[in-house]
Image (cartoon, rainbow, N blue to C red; front, side, top):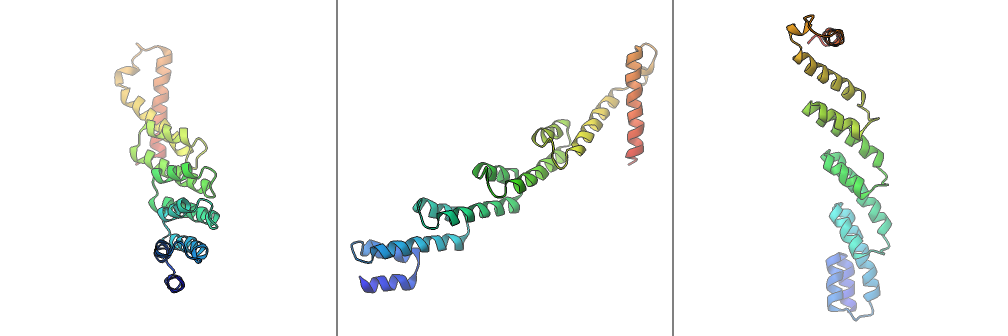
Length: 193
């Protein structure tokens, strides 16, 4: 068993220690091999640097010596994936998994940007309202408010017809229609294109 132990230490991989334990599970070297196996599992997880590899260590060693460091590395990897993927799903996964995580504020900023980009791509009142519901104090909050007003105005303007200005309308309705025209003129001045 001593030669097999020396060989496992020389190879120094998780597989080598597992092989040793399978063949020499009753030897005097088992306690040291178990320590080396855990360390090897941790080192392999760090080398792979994947969420799955860190989960493998955490599942295998729920009370392990490297548990805190593994959790930190796992969260860092999760955050790196959020930055790389830049999707709402990745943001929500991070926020669900690490509600008090080290990068929560940065993930919220990314999610704010992505939600706003989505609203702009859809360019409908409902999409902008969803952005404002999720991010009432968001970095882009003013633009959706302005765009909602503009889209509402465009909708109102499309309903205005020449006959709407005939004296058959109440004074209140004529004032409303005059405001629409004023807003439209202002809009044309602000956005000549």
